[in-house]
Image (cartoon, rainbow, N blue to C red; front, top):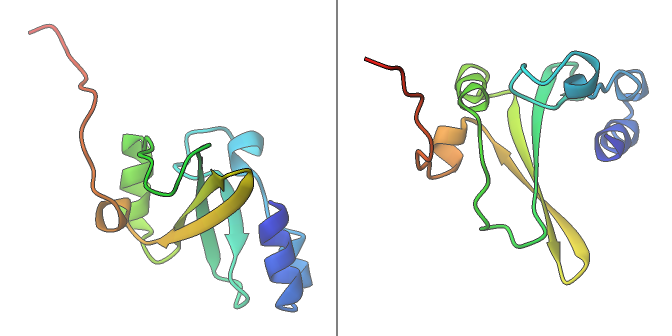
Length: 114
């Protein structure tokens, strides 16, 4: 949230900076992303935040909904990968469909009694 606010503030889009919203808290966790932010142009930026105590290449879980939303909104969708290397936090941005920016491996199945 602070990063997005500062990014827009520095870009001169202060009104948009004030509209950045932690939607997973304000609207619930089912939207497929955590933060609604904006580009300087006013175009929406949908941000899913994934954190780890380890490095960039540590696998993370993505829900089916996150994958679907990232496909539908690939131009607007970002994964902000927050990593901690020796106590120093690092952030990496993945823009686009999770299917295109990551290698996906199914780890769970929904089983219905036949």
